Length: 211
Image 1: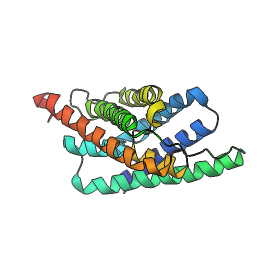
Image 2: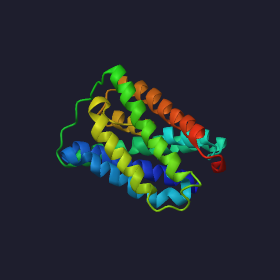
Image 3: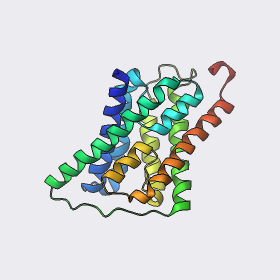
Image 4: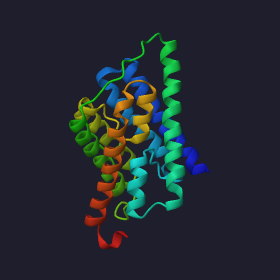
């Protein structure tokens, strides 16, 4: 139960940061705030739950053989609930700031599928190599690396697809009306595919001693 609570908390603050930074005036610095929020939440919860905060990462870690099958749905459930609740809280806070509700964005299908797959792949690939590999035992830099990966992907690919790279974030930005609900399948398909592809890549390139 503790692990699921940590996944809920981490995902909640990640999505809350996204909603508030993007809609609250952070402008071009929004990806930095988002990456920092993820970084600190990874450091805060990594020793308890593994700090996935992303159903695509949970899928990747499971395919890598470092996550129990019985915990997949509870992890994802906690992440989705955290993302949705954060969006609702963000809407209340933005209303108190007098900010206007954003117009839901509709994104191009093919470019967004590619962008979301690549961004999620990069994030999951970094997580697998730095947080689950025996070649990096007890390292102190994994949270920074994961956060910076999200920042880099948000800057480079976010303009194409809104830069969710995470099904729980996709739900959150849909609830917050930052993304049109017609986009949700794009995120779900591309994000989960990106996580799965990262796991397949990791399993292919890993050292034999890293089982």
